Image 1: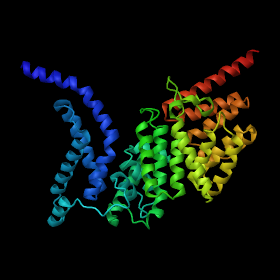
Image 2 (image 1 turned 180 degrees about the horizontal axis):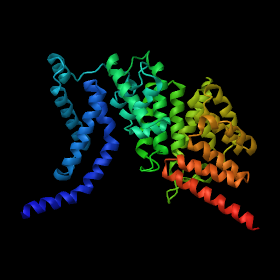
Image 3 (image 1 turned 180 degrees about the vertical axis):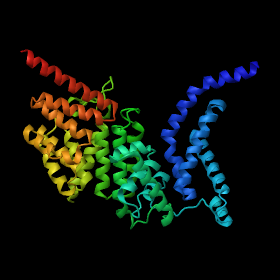
Image 4 (image 1 turned 90 degrees about the vertical axis):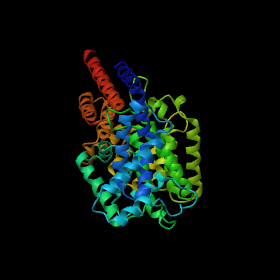
Amino acid sequence: MQRARDDGADRDARAPDARDALTRAHRDEWPRVVATLAKRFANLDLAEESAAEAFAAAAERWPAEGIPPNPGGWLTTTATRKAIDSIRRESTRDARYREALLVNDTQPEPLGAIDDDRLRLIFVCCHPALAMNARVALTLRMVGGLSVPEIASAFLVHDTTMGARLTRAKAKIAAAGIPFRLPDADDVPRRVSGVLAVLFLIFNEGYLASNADSAPVRDDLTGEAIRLARLVRQLLPLDGEVSGMLALLLLIDARRAARVSPSGELVPLAEQDRRLWNTVQIAEGHALVRERLASGQAPGRYQLLAAINAVHTDGDATDWAQVVALYDQLLTLDPSPIVRLNRAIAVGESGDLEAGLALIDDLEPDLSEYHAFHAARAHVLSRLGRSAASRDAYDAAIGLAGNAAEVAFLTRRRDEGAVDAENVKRT
């Protein structure tokens, strides 16, 4: 009886450490486990389900048995066993096929010197047989480890819509027999645009997380996006858009330490303490932008976005006129409502608030459900002294925002505007 009580006490004492270890392992090891299983078994559903079962087993066993010395290795081994057990249980498969699958752990030679299972999985998920939105969503789930609600938020669609999209994408990969390997050298350029879109969305979800229950900034996702961007650049060192993507991520991430205040509130660019910026990353990002400018080639979308962020991180203040000019170039390549909104913000910041507001208002049919549209509109209205309209816009932005730091910032700005308006009435 006493021994049972002691064992229970030991388990209770180990539980918090086990939970912390499991949280870290899910953040760090989920993409590795899924990618390893996908490479071996060529089945995304099996890889994802077996990885989930391995994490469930860890949640049960680690508090009782202790945290293994190599959590990632334990999870991969457990997930592999779960996958093999699942295959053996499937009575509908041809026996010889099942046995071949169980022992098949070979892959074609990697392209160049790069052999990274996660990078391999990205190219599988970004196969041109899939629609672009399916490529991005599938890679965010399988490699980035984002939940379905997080991906749905990135796409501005409902959770059920995104879940169905992911299911169809995995089914199409299985039906088309898409190989689980890095593409041939001739095929890489045709596949890279989807890869870059994936990296950008993974980074954005980390830099300003959409889930109100998560940390405002998720270093695991921003770091993973930058790591994979470096790998893709090693693979395609002469591709200007790949270099532009790496520069863009570095320059945005360089401001991360100043992005959220100690109280947990978002800090906008103009109010950030530039002493907190990562000067090493800024220098690397600027060097990549200069390298692309020196190439003489017409810049693509990510190179222009990198150039815009280079302007933001050059000197003590942003040259907004230069930003507007860069957005003018970007509009010829990407006339999307988001790009038009950012250009409108830059027009207002450059000094013409009325023109900026008019451009923002023109976007309401496209962006009425996008919190940043209402936040931008609220800011300009406040600067123009239209307090009541500004407050309404802030309320709309707060209702749509999912990031806790952003909600805190928007709420303070709304309340400050109300106080200012009340003081004006009293004078």
